[in-house]
Length: 348
Ligand code: NAD
Ligand code: DAU
Image (tube, rainbow, N blue to C red; front, side, top):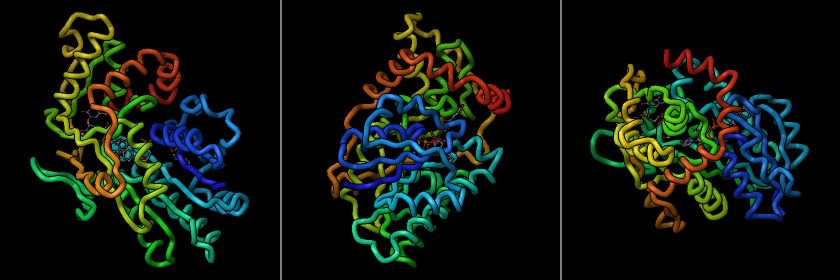
């Protein structure tokens, strides 16, 4: 029996991780802690909420008294920490909220874990989920490895880099058993439509412009979210303490090529004539500090833990589009309210 706290489990990646742990490990007790910010949505995990080994707790990782009391009450043996502010564009307009959640919130969890695990570190694990963006930007060649120096460029990536450093520092200073993974861009079901792929799917459905930043030549490495959840399960159980693992899709795309592929597939799925959706592409003002290229060398997790992506990008993209087309209500719910104000501010 293991008691595991997963933070941010109502968000995009977190919901897939919660589902994976709850269904794969019926003898574990899984606690999902989420503040339900604009990005958190209990609909993402409604299919597993009735299971006896699952408990949802609404709460904020930055609340010191609440987090300490929660750890004292439940005596968690493992923490899988995903809760964060995650959108680069929002970090440019509101950097302080990223410092609060991503840096202070992580510190608060580290302190609470350190306190309850003080003299009983055996079998405990603090798993911090991070991003490849902490490594900064690559030129046309090269890959991020686990030893690439940190060089973050956005308030989001600086806050994630800072939280990674604190996790390492707690390992060195207090002996906290931790593991960190740095993953590339995820895509798949339940992705909030402020990020490139779900935003553009939503806009294509609604015949709205597709705002490509700058010249569209920026490059990202894309990984299907369920493959990330599988990797997280593997690292949580088999990764080595005090180690970092990079996770990536071996799948680099320039934004404009990806958008063109998406347009083509959406036209097919929606029964629109070929070439309809590409006409929606609109080049807009670039993102400040826009990182040119991310690309992950995932050979460490591949060689040491035997992980690799299970679906091709074409398969993953098809599944993603199908999910959005058959979950119209989900899209309607998450794009009402606050979303409209954000969209207006970001793209007007
Ligand atoms: P998301 O924005 O979809 O979800 C974040 C979740 O955290 C939401 O459910 C939100 O309600 C919750 N949350 C936010 N602030 C909170 C707080 N103060 N207390 C409790 N809960 C809070 O994010 P995501 O895309 O699923 O990313 C999850 C994690 O993975 C993040 O740490 C992110 O940095 C990392 N990551 C994301 C990607 C990606 O491509 N999306 C890639 C690599 C790493
Ligand atoms: O690399 C991992 C990171 O990937 C995660 O840590 C972040 O949480 C996640 O949001 C993502 O960051 P990106 O900035 O790469 O993702 P986003 O979907 O915002 O943008 C992907 C690319 O598309 C990037 O080059 C910017 C561009 N873009 C994005 C949007 C929202 C556009 O051209 N137009 C847009 O409207």
